[in-house]
Image 1 (tube, rainbow, N blue to C red):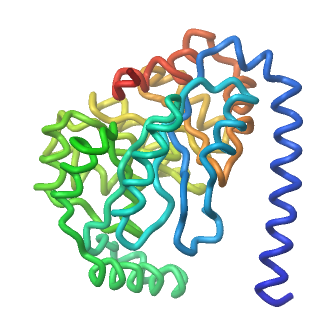
Image 2 (image 1 turned 30 degrees about the horizontal axis):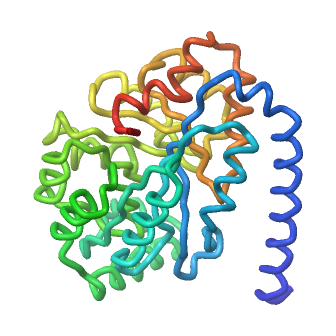
Length: 301
């Protein structure tokens, strides 16, 4: 099958999947509504060529959230080469939809550290990381000025960084974000989070998405849970975490450090909520994960 037909097939299957989840979420929404639910992890707005995070319409996102009974959500840009226009778009979305709270996103122009063992990984993965970092350097921006603009002008409430495509934050950039006392959602390995941030910035609020082990690294899941128990400023979000024993372990061992996230549009929020609600855990733990913990980090007023 050629790439165009494959993409059409994937889109068709994805539409069927989303329609099924929408149907299910409407049927069980009365169950979801017994909790206040805040979604910590939603990609939104126009993207630049990443097929699994296509353009995401804000009104469509609100329809999905309202069907399930999610009261608020944190949203941030899809992939961009610079994010300057994307951060402004998040500002306008936040202004138009009061239940959506915006995080900014940054291109640092700084190559992500790649461990030597990754050279032994599939060549496509290694070459992709190198090409991505080359493109980042070509599109370098004044990151510190963008940080200040996101907070002071756009009134965004945090930042999202994916070092594999955006580059790593410098110590100066982390220190600047720390001055504003807002969280950073960083899609990185637990070890990199420790090496780059936790050792030097014990007060910076860090959210590690996908419980640190995406897509299926059991060692990183366990390491992230252990680290979140040891470091006061480290939290884990549940986005795209499909293994119930990992979710159960995290919530029972560190109930004050787990935060609900869906990873919309890659994952429908109903799937993530259902995974958590079918765990054998106290309701008090669910309430912490669904809303109480994230309220410690983000001002939703």
